[in-house]
Image 1 (cartoon, rainbow, N blue to C red):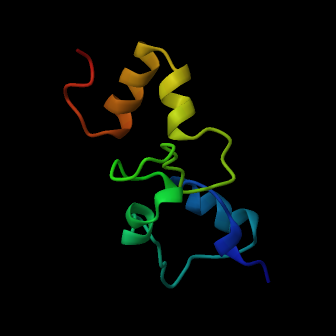
Image 2: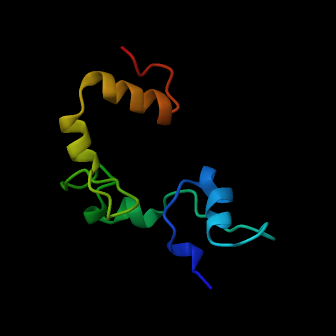
Image 3: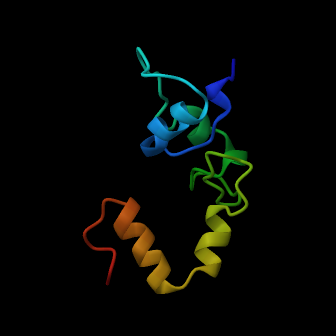
Length: 94
């Protein structure tokens, strides 16, 4: 049996992931969809402006690009697209 908790995929791909691992329709799904106080209270995680630490903000520490790199390498248009698409902001383009 394959431990699906080790699969790193977007939730929108759940049907494809289950099919790829030979699983049928799930009886239930347990998902952690948010951040916890651990991310905000741990300075090394880089989720808070309260600490003088690098802005990281990665949920997956294996991801290559952290928030600091993204903000310093993406151009204005790329950042506007990110804020518009993922930031629930109607004023990302100023």
